[in-house]
Image (cartoon, rainbow over all chains, first blue to last red):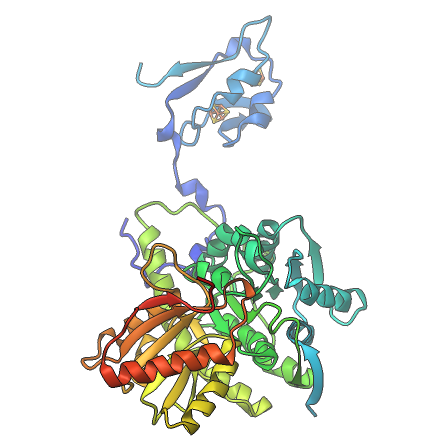
Length: 97
Length: 393
Ligand code: SF4
Ligand code: SF4
């Protein structure tokens, strides 16, 4: 993408396009990757509520895979996940391992 | 018909703000600004303005609320002094960086420590590079006139930057003078309707303010902001011309007094210029050809025009009501030196620091400086390039 010159930028750095954060993929910032273990998932949707990056996808009202384009690996979902019988449905794994 | 009244500087500025009738005001009390915002708050309470007053717990919050309200789309004001301006510091840069045309009278007061509530210019000078436009005012009339013109300058489509209008604490803010008020309608028509360029509250065209700008773009935004500053000079002159039509009072980038045929000159800001003019008259009678230049637009500083106006003098003394610790000279001196640097034949320059923390600046002080100037012009020699005057040894 060609970068804009100083004469082309918007006054005051105001972003005039709605939802443009979608274009900024922040998944590469991640050092730890959350992994979903579906058989331990009770579909409580805690992870979906707590994720600060809206990186839990849903399908037909149910929890689906992570959106790794935007998940920054903060680990909040893994911490909040109650899982089933003491078995977490989300575990954090180091990236690149 | 304009009305002639006897009021304090604070009262006059509060009246200007009432006539402009802004949408939002977020302010926090601080001496000597307090009674300006107190008067404005009573206008709001008594239904004289439709302004929404936001109660805040500090000046940091006041300026933050102003940023929010201005981004939302309102015409926004606040006012402060000294420590209050210091506490606003980080948000001042946000207001200018976001290009929000907030108007803020600054009632100049010394900075702590030692704690002092009286007038000097260290507050405004400390904020001189924060991207705000600064207009300085000699008396209550100029403070009133500058407050009104500030809206037109700030909101001009080529600019959209915040403006600070400075007046001396107590000396002007609390002294009663003869002031001419314009008609409410004249002020209303002069400032006109305000339309935010990208209001946050326009849900048909959603926008975001304050995004993170990384090294790939930060410099482009800064360069664009520097360019806006270059357009202020002309807008200030144009607005002054329009203002003259409704008021009969002339304004420019600076005021000169008996300067054209002068051999020596004093450069000085705000209320002390009045005292200096009297001293100049007295010494002219004794054969010293002295003149004065009083900057009005301090940011962006009109280097070229000031240099042209001063270059013919033999000697100039710049009087600063603030010191710039660690710099060799006071802040006003440095601007004047820069204005003259590109000229081949330069006047001899020296610097006096006066009036800190409300210390009186007396006609005697001005006369001493003028006599020293005459001596320097004759001999070509300066004894001390920078010194404090009116201070006990
Ligand atoms: S690790 Fe953080 S960002 Fe990624 S899905 Fe979990 S809560 Fe969201
Ligand atoms: S928090 Fe854990 S159990 Fe609940 S929906 Fe998310 S993954 Fe499943």
